[in-house]
Image (cartoon, rainbow, N blue to C red; front, side):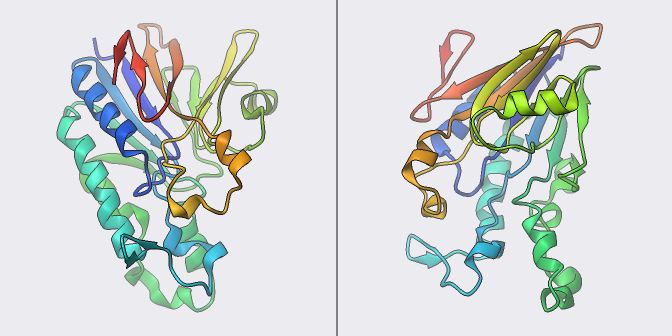
Length: 252
């Protein structure tokens, strides 16, 4: 029975935790016969090259080369290629924009950049998402969907220490999200909010905007959800340390 879903948020490719992502690839390969869905729920891309915070500054250099949009798309496609090589054809794939993908729309909305038209490549086109078979949601502030009948999936809205509680207090629906780079779970009666952590590498220079105490609170992790025959869900947050994580008793 295909009833397993893997949910990744805030990967910030190509500045992702490569060791953790290699572990996720191995996990997909091991459970591919059970896998029903693969979900990238926002900020898969960092899009540092379109950041409004860096306007007028020299681009960050990686291995001596300046970051640009072409390079970010090319390197991020390499990670999607790794996933695609092990994902079965039957698996449904979802991609929700996050606030970092939304940098494309915010950049395009400025007067000068709006003159580029379709020549400025969107994340959907740059990552070949539709060709790869992803169902794409581009309105990160409003878009959501469900795993099963009861677990709502979206990018996330809150930062701080308790985003799971904040989200559940506001929405009053079981949900799974990312956005805060933290990992926590909050229960309220029969509802649960899963804040699944992030998939980035905090040692990368693009994250130097954050002070050490903030980055120390960021937790690498992702979500796993199983659905039952009635449409119910059974979720968990899998956390990674130094790029390693355990699932079902096995280290990845």
